[in-house]
Length: 336
Image 1 (tube, rainbow, N blue to C red):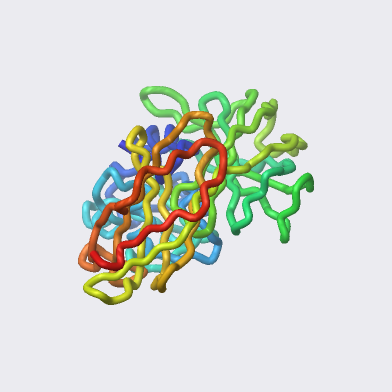
Image 2 (image 1 turned 90 degrees about the vertical axis):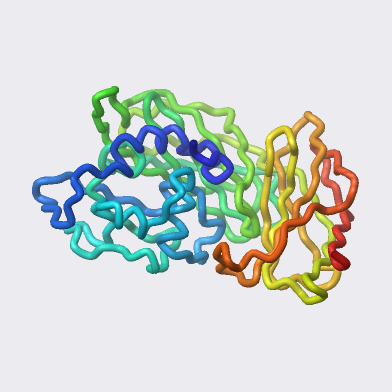
């Protein structure tokens, strides 16, 4: 099933539903006539919170295989299976290649729905105030959960981010798409909201429930303020020493692991030196979590399977985490 650590629940249900009509592209036709078929368009950031910075770029293969990672296929393999593909233009004539570089703002066009809903029909906007601002840079996604529909967008953070200041947000709204097993798409309804705090060094982020619910009557509507929400997490921080065969490691991955739920967060360090500082933000919780650390090394930043170097567990006692920050955690793998 879907790796919820990647999608973090924001569009998980939509992506599950979309598979009935998304990845199984029955047209198998590279000469699609947009006059006869519905054309779907998406900004990549609308499909999954994969980009922890707007500047981050990856190949289409990497993005596709991350979004649909349970299929164990990349974009090129999907094309080779006879699917029509993703396109750079609404006329569906300029097809993306697996090697093409994409980012959060990249627009894709498709002959099939990529989220289980119909074409985009509008944008809902509003504002929100924040407290408990993290000290590190982050992106903030807003997801909405209506009746039989889901969407997500970004909160436009002011710079510098200040507490109790109105910040704008928006998310796209999609039309209904009818399958044989039911209807999935927008209809007027009361909606709930969730924030995903995604630090720029992190992979998963953590979710915060917005207490306010709102009635959304139209696909194009300003629904006003969602109130004030604390997004404070709990910060684990310290230093790491890590080498491989006595040499520095070009790219290091640190996983914060809670055996009850697996990896809660993953961060990356580029060529860390001696006593390199690191920090991980986790969701606050009154439940005690005994966190251990797993460290992986890679030969380069844009790695593939062949660049893997090692997978080690930090030999330190589990860190007990609830709602308070835990500093001064030392991870020493320099002699292994």
